[in-house]
Length: 221
Length: 221
DNA sequence: ACCTGAACACCGTTCAAGT
DNA sequence: ACCTGAACACCGTTCAAGT
Image (cartoon, rainbow over all chains, first blue to last red; front, side, top):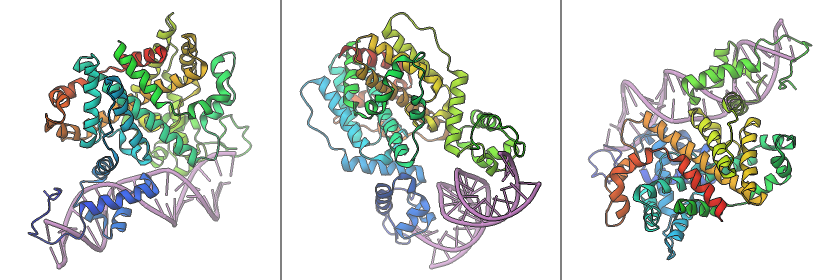
């Protein structure tokens, strides 16, 4: 199959563009202008070829985005020094994945693609699962615990990223702001009282607090 | 402005289509065929009009999707009887939102739009925040707690929904399956040992377990 | 084996004009 | 006030043919 990344032994025509070219320029477009600007046509133009030439090196746009994510993970996801305490190891491993993914806004489109991203990230998954077991969970509960951590992490990134995008795009106040502006204090007293500080409170980065709470809860039960 | 939903006093030409018509047919398309089949052109055709007529009743596609979500929430999100224990109230309120959103797969496209969905859902948010305070958290920590619960909930729905979509679309084994098939037991022993049961374990619905763990952890700290 | 041209079957949205 | 026609500026992907 022509999709293999192994170098050909030139039995046919020499290739003008490579998979690496494609991923490289795709990475440039995506980091400079965002994921929505990455189109097969645009990419072909930038790489100095035609849209159809791309389909000879990549199965389609979806595979391209997955390759891009793997490439990004390999490039930026480095193994941190882990603390001694197993519980802290879980927190540090999860936070490492989180921070790397949160730093690249274009990830959103691909993030939910699969429940884990690349071979590079598996080491982190191993640490999380293994140390949850170390803390006393059964392997089954450890996997479920990892899933919960991943849901929390992915959700944080996705919700924050699209909220940020909305803020950048829109000029007008958000839907939330309009709704919070006229809350009925009789019906929803707690929210009415907090409405003035809601934006400020939700802008705070409390990922690690929530993560710690979740890990604590997983280990307590 | 022409976008108001208040009935006009017929000062001009009588309207052939209404906002309700539009939302109604949009709902039908989306529930019958999925969110990706909902296009302005298709919707116009189905409603017996032209694409441009829609823009007289709705600001654009994004607003349409938001209206659709509000409509869905009002229709299906009913207030449950809450238990006595404040901690259990938080769990029940969060799970109620979760179950309603998880039941409609087209939600994914809109879900991350804002951090809360509609006026209807605010009652649930109120319950969560209020009962977290009842359990001893400061209002600030209660809001952060609500956010953590929302991240976990949104993440669960998004990740599961796209995983399900992938399973439906793709014929081939997923990327995860291919990676898990040849894990190095030397490097990643825990995952290698679990690889055979991974699919089965992650298919289990453990939303409520994770939610309980998170709430416990939030209240313990 | 690798690449191209032309085409298919679409998108969301704007503008100027009609009734 | 409400609606239409035509157009703008795009998409991802397939097919048949070229070198």
